[in-house]
Image 1: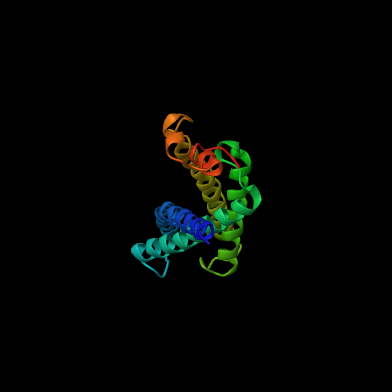
Image 2 (image 1 turned 120 degrees about the horizontal axis):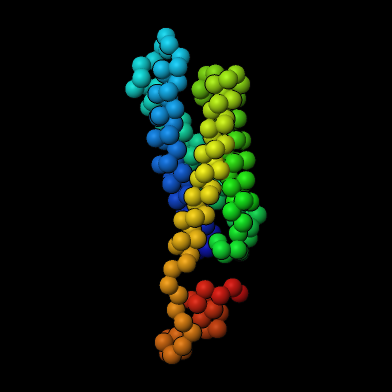
Length: 171
């Protein structure tokens, strides 16, 4: 049960992180669209807030889904064992799918015209970039200092499995 909760917390954490990155990008895209489409019924602030919220929701959904899929597809691999290319492709596919769903649902009210396709492209790039960034951060955290197998580990009275886990070895 503890492992399940830890994985759920990790998926939520990745979702929140992606949402925090995607929201300001959505706001900027909203501002750009506001100036490219004269005569918009909403003011600049409203368009930016709406796009920031939409991108934050998509970022959260994308990050949480990405973490869950990664768990099923990559299993117990350590971060240094994962391919950056495959990681980025998974993120791009997820971002493109979420962008397509958002356009199909009418979240941008544009349909699959030039603006909708542009938003799908932005979501695809955000998914790819977020996935690559997630792997880079995870690898940096994973490469932290490790204990050496020595007297201190022996004195702790750990089981063989606990010792291997503490030293970062795979079971």
